[in-house]
Length: 363
Ligand code: ASP
Image (cartoon, rainbow, N blue to C red; front, side, top):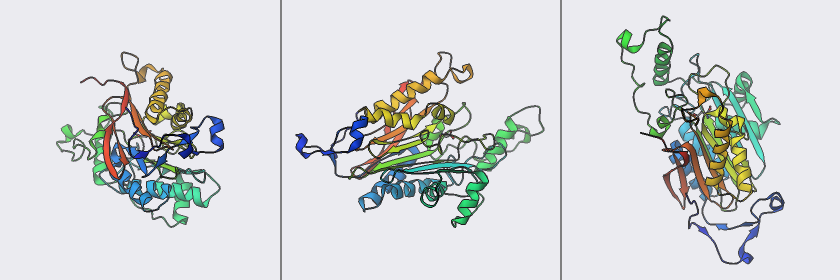
């Protein structure tokens, strides 16, 4: 998929192009075309997020403020069961959130993992970046820090998420004492309802658990880049499990000389391949965002050797999605399996695009 769009004004001749600085020595694109409007790319559930991010940047705002404000819309939305408030809980019924942010111009990074009780973990990640000498705070320490910064601790488990969790618990085993909805005769509202973000249900970690997260990246006309990833992580996870989203280099990576990338999907696969960092490094060599995403996904395929994670043809039985933007404002998204989509805002307009993919989904 070509991601070059005419919102980028190009002029013939190198005289009009600006050098990007010392990173050219590391293989970054030596020239930068002039962008006229901001560009933002996000996971499919971020359609409103990219719009907000571009609006804030167009109004003179900073790229990190823009993307964090964009994902806050989804974090506080109880209908997105993969992020923030309303997120599906862990094995014990506790909603544990992961998030990371990176601010290209200042080379800043902040993250939180297994954070409970705060609706907007991306803002806490941003506070870690701004107000501490650390990059990652986890669990109780992350919550204490958030409290000290004035965040409010709230119950994040919505009734809908709780009921999906108790149904999952009931279906885990037929030798325990929990009754399934069929056995108890109770219809569990919510479990079979389509998610309001249909794409999130298209993909699954294991055929049962929906996957989802929001990643949002943006570049402004001056070429400044930021990104954020935020999630409630894998539904029904082992308490304390941390996914890729709060791991700098895995679920998010930004290099202001090159571009940004973030991921959704099976976090373990992304962590093992340093996914988002790999995509940015591939873009540094001049690869387009889409091609870089596809190449990093091929590495996941190579790394997936466990029979339990492969289909009968040896392909991963899970999905991973990457979303990327480079300093020129070229953008792209790709997934292991066909059918995935992502959100993009260019030239002041937001829309969803089909992700490039490695394998065609059957049926
Ligand atoms: N990447 C997230 C994680 O592994 C979840 C997801 O995107 O579905 O925690």
